[in-house]
Image 1 (cartoon, protein in one colour):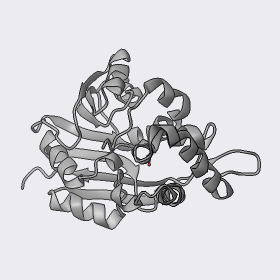
Image 2: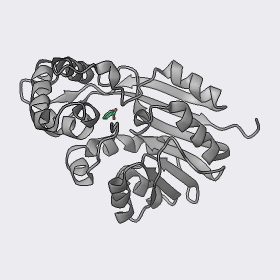
Image 3: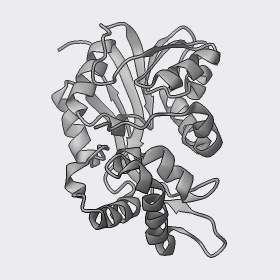
Image 4: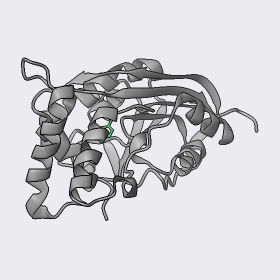
Length: 253
Ligand code: BEZ
């Protein structure tokens, strides 16, 4: 069973550009210097990777989606299809950057081990992704409707949303020094209807439902979420919670 959506760069640009727009302050936090080698883990369609390139970085983007990597390459970014759990790099980057991707890597220790290995001593990780409490309402709606189709929601956990304490412990276990780590709510008003969001991001749940019933499933989740996430003016707000961290690989040890 697939646990990753089949990403569509056009759909992403149209309905989820807010993900990269809101990731831009993370670049300030990274404070990249011209000439630095930066690895963008989960680069998606490369829009933020391109910003790093334009700032003079020698940047490599990796993503598990071929379509997204092609979109990144079309922006002139050096990008490769690589699973973030299996980074093949050895002490060659000054920094690892990651926006809205690490929650898809449900084996966080494998992802962090690869990130640590990719960094040169003294290199830094600056990342933001979904943290504890992310999408609580959306998940409740998905689970409620899934049960009516006879599916056990416990069988599907496509996302990893840790607390700051848990992620700090994992970082430290991998030998990182944590400079800062914060968990904070960031509700996001969608550019359109939640149906598009569900079609794009909730595919691992849709995969549990026969193709012929998926549209009905999505409509039922939408109706379930309506009283919680739709404002009287018809705008939808998703209950995002972000975990943002800055950690350094020590020069010794
Ligand atoms: C996010 O937090 O950015 C996110 C998590 C899971 C699915 C879609 C988005």
